[in-house]
Image 1 (cartoon, rainbow, N blue to C red):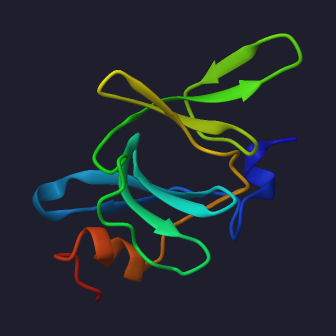
Image 2: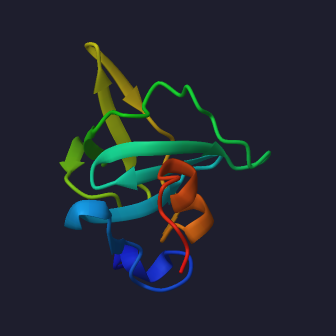
Image 3: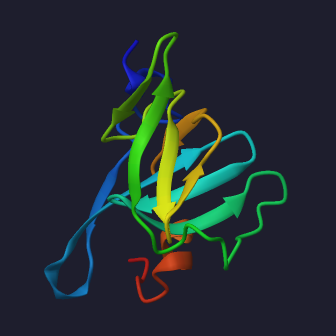
Length: 124
């Protein structure tokens, strides 16, 4: 099954917008059972608890790139470049492996969410 077919909302779950100075940015939200990971490309720019909807300002993965997305098969562990349903984001921070629980959904961030991690972005 195509990972896009089970994402929340529209089939395309990345949003592109132009930041000041003409920089293009790819953003997506990846859900695990309890946590939302807000990604700009491969870098985590925000983490939010799914139950309380509270932003976790000092989460250890904020500001770090994920090294890959892992999936366990019967015989091995596969590494992929892009998030997909059932995969786990894998971060390596200061020599430590940090692995999320499996991805259960993906979607585009809302403008309010984008403004949380980029407060200078104005709605028009």
